[in-house]
Figure (tube, rainbow, N blue to C red):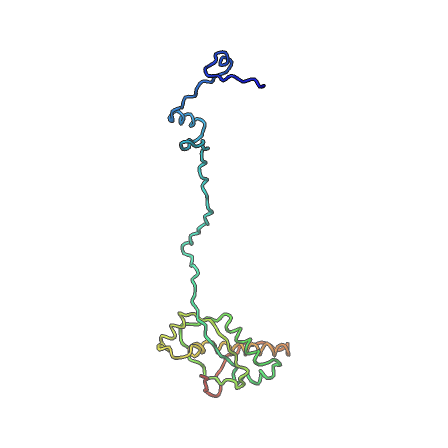
Length: 219
């Protein structure tokens, strides 16, 4: 039979003397606890929560600021120029026909090269120039068509005096300035081609476009 363990119903001085009793911990006031935490660098949390470590101050974010260069006084700043595209149609003169047919190159290519050279550095002047009445060559294959960009201010100044109702083609307003330049470039190219066949030929002054025997002007 098992031995029955007696139930202890009252304090036993002999048993309690061998036990180590710790002193009760008294609650610390909140103000004193806060002063103690300040020395340790910790931040008190809410009631019943654990102590939270102090937050680090946010690191300031520095953005790269582009250098702003002030324009120097007295230096002209570039301005945007408004342009407008105009369709142009140019061809050679009748007096060019014989030389174009004998130059050994497609005459249309000569006219195209002359147009390219003429428009490379050309700028429209704000004054109307009447088209010349030189007789043009008949082959339609020699006629070159393209578009050129002209300054809006210059074109508007011409329209104010010559086409205030805006009923004329813009090519008719600028051809007086551009066509003579193309014809001069055709003359210059023909001279260059003749020099290729005859290196001993001396180059004279730039030939000028004269008036031909006729006064037909294409519309």
